[in-house]
Image 1 (cartoon, rainbow, N blue to C red):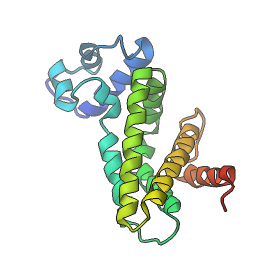
Image 2 (image 1 turned 120 degrees about the vertical axis):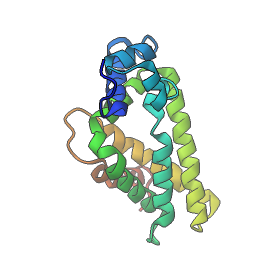
Image 3 (image 1 turned 90 degrees about the horizontal axis):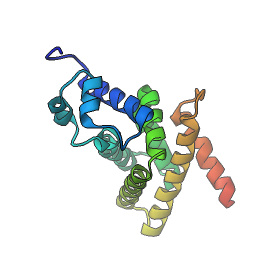
Length: 189
């Protein structure tokens, strides 16, 4: 095994996702992931705390970026629109070029109740962080919470469409339509 090859994180993530799809998350070991990626277990642990972090390692960066985009937005429009635009900017930055990996990650999480529970917890934390950012922008606390939650629903609806096989539109393009569907559903103008 060569001592060093580039793109260790990507190779580990690809190997893990392949193994999770083949044999399930629970039955996959770190040793198997490292071997498939042609790396050592030590290399794995240099990049990830455990195999769950292969799936959730980017959550903190995603939250940081969305919150920053909300806080720095220069519009004075409805808070829901501010958050949807922030999601679009961050999707372009962090997700679009990794669409296949993100879709495979989503499939693994959806198939595992423990991972799905963790994902829901991460989403709740992101909702709270967005609501805090909206409050810092001057939004009333109740409205901030509702806007953050509504934006998360729109993001999740757009995300489900974006990860479908054969879907070619960008997540950024899908987000406004999902927000509009939400408005229509609740009878908002």
